[in-house]
Amino acid sequence: MSKHNVYVVDDDQAVRDSLRWLIESVDLNVKTFSNGQELLDNLDGADISCLVLDVRMPGISGLDLQQRLQRLSCKAPVIIVTGHADVPMAIQAMKSGAFDFIEKPYSDQLLLERIQCAIEQDDGFKRQQTINDEINQRIDSLTPREHEVMGLVVSGHSNKSIAKELGVSIKTVEVHRGNLMSKMEAKSLSELVRLVMSSDRISIED
Image (cartoon, rainbow, N blue to C red; front, side):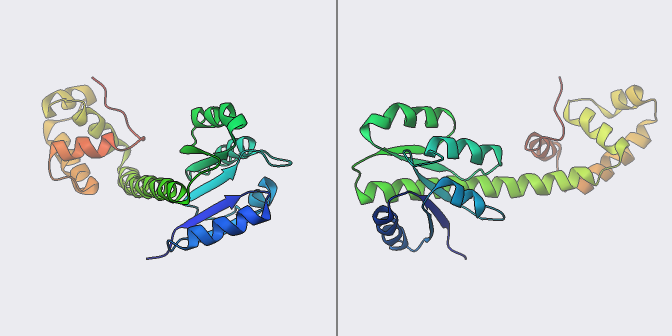
């Protein structure tokens, strides 16, 4: 299993070196950047598990960097490191989706604990995203009619009412239902409902 990647952005070389040593001590990969633009220039294809951003930096601040990362659909959890005077900014970052903020001076153990928690959250998100992608692939394999029948099935309609709604025979509905259950790899109606509820491709209507 590959190591997780932690990206650190801080304009202070001594801080970057210290954080690299600290984070590598718990067997994590670390990449450090002296400013936000340097990170943005090296973002393509990066598999990031956690970002540690200083608030006050020349050029792009930690808060601005967080917002730019969001616009670029970078979903890695962000930990903001802040001085006492920057706490309002850090709170704003939290409201904008940051995972946490840590006020200086902080203990090494606290920072490591929050990084590990952020990585666990990111792992969970990526696992769920993989599951969602698999479910959406199954949905994409359905024919338009099977998709239509599935929407009615998970909304609680019987085969008889679906047949009436679509103007087809009950036998035809049963065939479509059997096909979509097979393609969705669902062994029961409750499992089919759970799969659909996990996807953003179809909604369950009353």
